[in-house]
Length: 305
Image: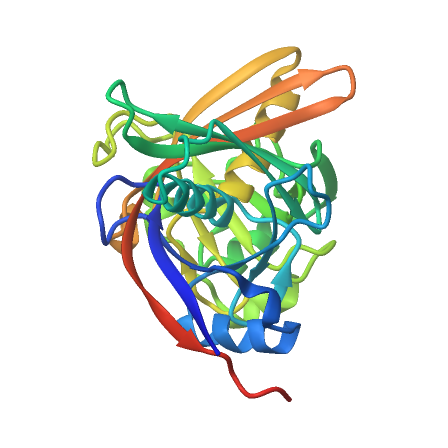
């Protein structure tokens, strides 16, 4: 049996920018090991698999895989999967959808589709499935070593390097300058000495020194995200949401909105529109962005183990 797939570049309106995603449709016949092999074959930061919902009131059950593991939630797979599914519905002559609800391991992910004035599909905004949680802190020395930087490159006035999550955990590190962010790179020995930490396997580094980067228009934040595979992610919605929620929590009551650039230093400029609100039941985050379909085709099911 062959399965249909669509690839999209997410958090961009331009093909070959942003973060690529593969979406495998009608994946009910695939088991976990087969999904993992397909994700490894695409070798994107994530591949999503769309299955019939377990609760008919929801849109779909979505499973998300990196090349080496399944993850409970991720940002760009939700935005990209929503755009692909909306595109499929419109092409089939069905009404343009306004909202989706995806069942995921981290919880129910609610997504609002975005259209321009002419009704053309642009992108989507997701609401993170969990409120902000804050875990262990890391020393400036350990974080700097993991990123091939110096302790002086760390910005500690607002927060120490800390594990945070709105559905998936990251070590979030604020840097003192855009130059430090540009110089950052994962150091295998330093990374192994620090990570994983409280379930976080990736380091999200960011700076508020963003005025010189105009590839995506003005931004409040520039960021980079490094994985335990020593690779870089062009756009990380789940980490951006967690960082925004952390900054909102530190600021106090109210809503925080940020324009976040990522992927610039690896040639895949991405723009993420993040917001977080401090509520009585916690700090809740959301992330929006555009997406563009790039390729589509079919693939055979891998042999079962």
